[in-house]
Length: 92
Image (cartoon, rainbow, N blue to C red; front, side):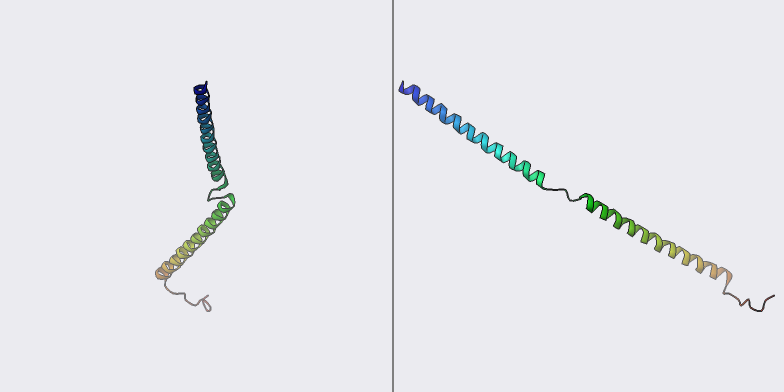
């Protein structure tokens, strides 16, 4: 009878130990899930909008500079081919 009580006490201790370990694992997994959920991504929708607008502005500036450079190049080439402007005041 005493051996039976000892055995059941041993089983009881093992069951409690098992439950404690399960609870620890569950708590660890929940903590990991909370940490994962709490951390947001780097590119929030607001940041994406700002980045897109900045990229559009930069592209527009680059395009404008490129057009100005090409126009200047055209004026320079036309000036070389045709020479300087002649006064047209007295011409009939």
